[in-house]
Amino acid sequence: MRTIQLMNSEAQANNKKAGRVAMNFAETHSLMPDGQCGSRKRHQAIDLALSKRLVWDLLILQRRAAGWISNDAKSCFDRVVHWVAIITMLRFGLTWRVLSSMFNMLSSATHRVRTGFGDSKRSFRPPSVVPFQDCGQGNGAGPPIWISVSSVLITMMEAMGYGFECLSVLESQQVTAQCFCFVVDDTDVIEAGGTVHHSGGDICASVQAAATLWSGGIRATGGAINPEKSFWWLIDFEWDARTGQWRFRRKRSAAPEFDLQIPGLSGDIESLCRLEPDDSERTLGVMLSPLENHKAQEAQLVSKAKEWAEQLWPHLLHKYDVLPLIRTTITKKLEYPMALTTLNAQQWQDIMSPVLQVCLPKSGVCRNFPRLVVFAPVNYQGLGVPHPFGKQVYKHLEMILRHMSGGTKTGAYMDANLQAHQLETGTSFGLLQQDYQNTSILASDTWLKRVWKELESLDMYVAFDSPALSLRSHHDALLIDLFMDLEVDQDDLLWLNWCRIFLQVTTVSDITTADGRYIRHCIWNGVRDDTYWTPYNWP
Image (tube, rainbow, N blue to C red):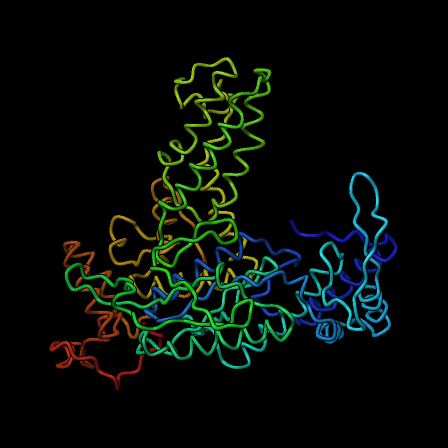
């Protein structure tokens, strides 16, 4: 168990006051990088999880190789070096007198153990003139202190050029991601290739350098990375000529001999566990992996539902309390990851099955009662149990509308994905306004594509005022629109689109001579004209 420090009430009030002042100053002066999302207003853990998913999707759409290191720092609050914390909090606007008072109290405090039987008679203090180096679990200023320290580390990674950087394909807006940090000691470090021509093997050295720099920064501030709780992915892509699709490269084909190493808790060099692209790990409460693995998330949700049902089964409840209990407990637990899940209605019904099998008899209803009535609203004579699929759709719409209209970093990633999809499909409409049956075969498998499929099944669409593919002359037309007007077979449409992407063309005028009467010789022979100017940032 971790020791929680119960501080003097006046000192704790001052700590909380100092923490609020520091955070307000940092927000006002933009001292916290975008990747620092912990303990900040209007920042939620699920938003950061969605940002991670969208950055992975950007790598998929741009075929960019990257190293993604998810690391866990050991007991950050218990290992922060005082002089480092003081300097970083001075940067956050606190005065020396405030910090001197706070850290003198921390370094010279007398500690006792408090239990239900009272305080211990024995006490302990630092055994030498060197004080204990920590800010204390339970310190009201603890989260702001760690944010000030980690913000400097993230800024250091950005200054050294590590991270992922690209331009949105239609508007050439810069999109960046260096580190993602939310929970106090969990951080994702990213290092991506500069162009699509860099393979996974080419970036191994820079991935190792990024990991070494980050772990060195953590150790310099008093912390250490726990290799047992850390892991990483090497993201790379290869062309599958059989299916006409890009796919993730497995470990055996993407730098299999490379071993990522960092100093462990003792300072010895240790290797980090490398995962396959579809190996999911629980981060920020959601099962995530670069290659979508819905089975892992579904299995976790089923496990939660079964565990809750098993705990409820032996207890005697009033039958009128059971259904409100479902609405206020287990549905809230299942609701948290819905922003990222894209399960269908039947899958959600299977997840809820263990809950209903236990709760319906306890509420005086047959366990096999028709599910349409179970999930129907009370005013339509249903039982009023909310269907999780409906909540999932609401969460998706809420995420899209809130972030796209709010100008958040997550919204920037989402907009970059939408633009990349529009260039990929080559049509005159945004992804969410297209007909899924006609153009879904042209789009890579991303979170937005899965949400698009979900909305299409419900006859819903979301429209945005987003940039469109431009025409170059009068009577010009987009190639994909022409192919669909000619009712080209779906398989042929897929291969025509890959030829279009390889040649980096979108309109008829891109492939014809100036008078529009002939197809250019290089286009006819399948040779890309590198001298031809294009306004887009192609993958």
